[in-house]
Length: 368
Ligand SMILES: *Cc1c(COP(=O)(O)O)cnc(C)c1O
Image 1 (cartoon, rainbow, N blue to C red):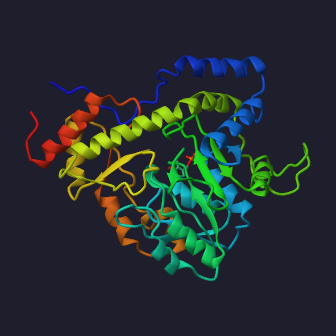
Image 2 (image 1 turned 90 degrees about the vertical axis):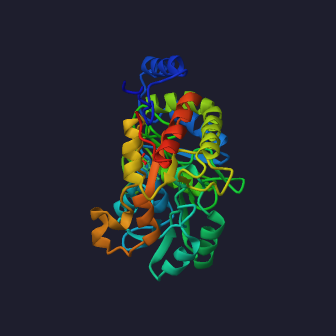
Image 3 (image 1 turned 180 degrees about the vertical axis):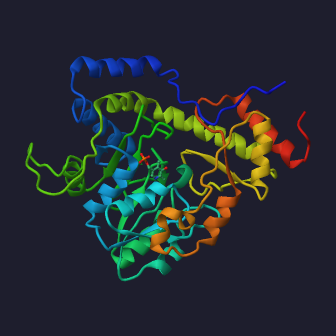
């Protein structure tokens, strides 16, 4: 008998379905589809919920990183430090503004930017550091922030996996220039397509990003600089408003499932350590020297897993032109990481099945 599949994630609307449909209808009835009242209302609500003064809606998380860097004055020829273990989009945002990504290794336990390695990588052209709050866990902002302050570098936080996360009690996205968020459907706060936002406490940064996202216009058809087209749709903003109100509850459920896994996976595999209670568990990666065999075993048990990420950024062909330095901690993690299913709609019984299947692999038992 084939076991009932446990998918990695389920993106069909759940108990929010009626509200999502009503939000779409509201936008259709109004007939205003880009940068309108829904975007404005969402920006205000997202800033308030996140503990920041300003939010600016944009088209994607990648654009949010790029626009924050531009607002910080970073551009052609500048060097920007990014962690070696993250989604490639973090570094693609740097490349998109003509700057050069400098890959720096991560801390072996937290898998976020290592402050000492960061300090060692600072050179005369270094202008910014982009820590990534990977898997929902805040990076060591105290450590990385000290490096940025000492050398006068901009600090742009990649918060694309860290909606509502806090670092030592401080909301992510508020330590430096600002924070970049993605609303790609799989993120903790997901739209029905692409979307993103910038959070900042700096009114001048918010103002600059507002101009840049809309082609560099101040008044209609008056372009003061070469901005980009990175606008947020009204339908996405309306859906995000509905979902934002549920996000604290869904985040609590993610933490509950993570705590369950931590209790029940003892000795079987090594979960990435929780170093800050402000972790929001976008993902639940574990490490195993026999990762590929474990993934195959779980697949046989009907459990879908993914790898975040199978190639560290210095090993990606896309970045070969930047002659990246080796980052051995990230390279090893890329061979060992496996993300178990963890999303708010995962049932207790399914989480238990995942934990049992991992335990069975560990004990070397063959599955019937
Ligand atoms: C998703 C993600 C991005 C890119 O966001 P998009 O909305 O897909 O452009 C950037 N960085 C990290 C860490 C991400 O997880």
